[in-house]
Length: 292
Image (cartoon, rainbow, N blue to C red; front, side, top):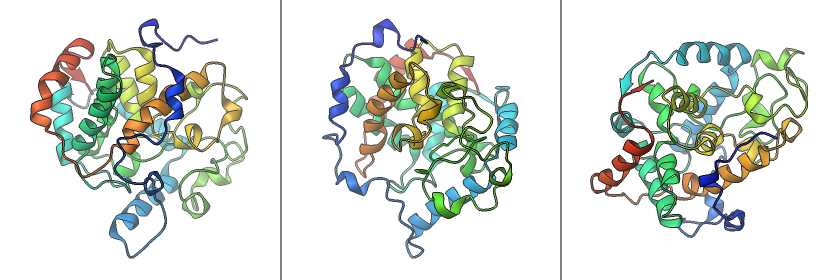
């Protein structure tokens, strides 16, 4: 069995998962992740178009190419704060829940993690930087290759993927017998960390953390790596690829996703006042200038 949890973080009671409708949500849970098609609603239509481009263009070859381009870590150098401040100028085109700069969402998520588990500072920082990989959008990467739910490439697309019915039409992997079967290019129970996911900010930031030798626990890196993998952790797809230990990854992602999802609102955190605390966490777990 793979060792997934560090001793210092194996502290949160899994019964916390019994509270999926987090008290900090300021609207009905059913109102989140509303992907209904409505061509008269500019926000919903923007979301639909983003996913259409993603599902048309994210192929095995495309993902391998993006990994080759981005995982050289030679695009830019910045501190965590400098990179986060770039997100002042990014609105996520795949998000039906909020139309505010992404840095607002980062602090909303972090503050709710801090409120619920004040003793776990690593979780506060994880929430703050979970979307930091979206900085790719400032370096000529289209948003459909940066944001949104991720899915497995190289096998049959999961049934719970948003806009699944029509959005993949024209994607060449759907006609490729190497990639369009249940297992595709993988082996049963190979483990989720051995799957090739559609390219986006999750996978990129996971590798940025590892490349820069973060002191965050490995479970924090896995939370970031899989937090957008909704077809698996929320939709029930891809269970035939799970290996021993993957249930632990899923447990942590589901704990974390309460902060990622249910904190999205128009309430504006006082970011300037919060910086000293979060800078102390950056200095502890991810200090200095990073290579992106």
